[in-house]
Image (cartoon, rainbow, N blue to C red; front, side):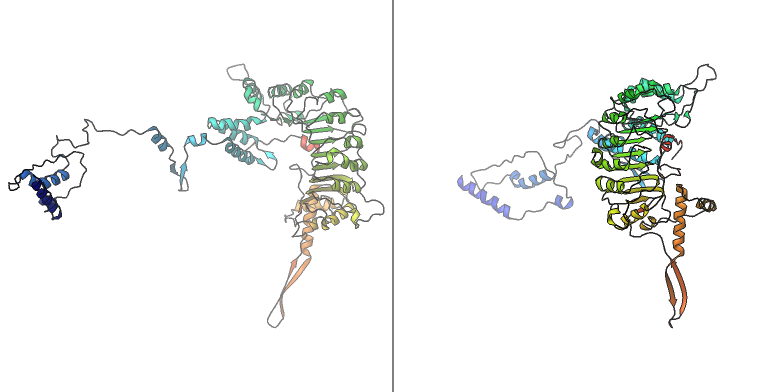
Length: 606
């Protein structure tokens, strides 16, 4: 038995080493070797008699295994392949939800007018954008409707309304801009219907109804522009309609109102209800008091002071008298008003008497950023010099002095040297301030010096020696941060020669006639005349030769000579020479109260 097993093992090992014969089916057809999951069981018969014949099944065992491994597909239609399943119907694929979202997120390309392919983002991308991006887009839209300090109201309102109708996301952002700066519509009277005696409501009445029915929209109003209702020169544009009462109702709805512009009522003509509504607006940030001494005011001195108790956020205060008052406000009333405004930053006072506003009131001012003093007989050069010791001097950035009749240039020297944050300085009066007796404008003690001054407006009808002092200070480098000069009274061009050359403009025949007529006068404050005189100085400088270009031949004989004219100004200067008004279409360089009070409304497309 053991001998038979050993011989069988040897025969099997020899068969493995011997080359196997290739089947004819291998040559004829080569089929892929597919894995078979069927388990094969081999059976062997071992006998004690080694001489007996080997069964036929054992001899063909190798061929059977090869055929079974290669032919693993079903031989008939009814025979099932291992590891498969027969379906009665053809299977269909169903996309998962994330596959559907991925298909929607693909940007669709479309052809633009120029033929270039553009991609359109899906709607849900815009819904996920942060609010800051929408705010930046609206900022560019607002800038497109502002040109040269003019607001094109109709186009602005139309674009914002269209954005509100685009989507809910746009409506949430555009509504804030639309009602944040609310421009009141024109006071048109509603027309009667053909088949009814009832009158249709005007746009202003419809706006009032909207603010009444939707308090959340009235809550958004921060700035109210009433330029369409009231003109400071002519009053209400539609006297037949109760515009004053309608305006009071609009103010009453806007509980978060911060500013009301375009309608500055004299305190003698407005109703007490108008002030009552404004006093209920604690977030008001700017207000203008316009008073006349010819008629009695509805507010006395104590009532005027009490009006400011609730305005703790007021930042801008303007006190204007039509003519110089005669002590009707009360001694110390202005100082008491200012003391109650803890957030005051910008202050302008004009036309008050010596008793109402004087040097003591000036010294008691709180910390300010801008200050304008106009037509105040009680303010002197000594008071301006004492301003350096007040609380307002440390943060004062803009200082404007108009018609104060300052006679001493020393006050300007003290202000320039002791206002560490001064950026803009404006002086306008008839007579130029003079130097102290025995002081020459060439000495260093007479020069103006400021390390922070950037914009200088110097307009004295009679220039005097102050122009020479100012030119000497600029040439000596005492004003290193200066960037712009506005000097309408620079008749000789001394300041223009220290600035960059101005642009060349054409002069028409009307300009020449106007220039010839105004030259006969001694002095004038016309801004148009200043521009024409500056252009004439440019042309006169070009007529003067700067250098000559001589072209010679090989024999050093002169052939041609070209004269190159000179120019007025300094190419290396950082200072710009400006002759533009503060208010558009004005002939005065410095804006006055009538220019600001007169409402200007532009309706149209930018």
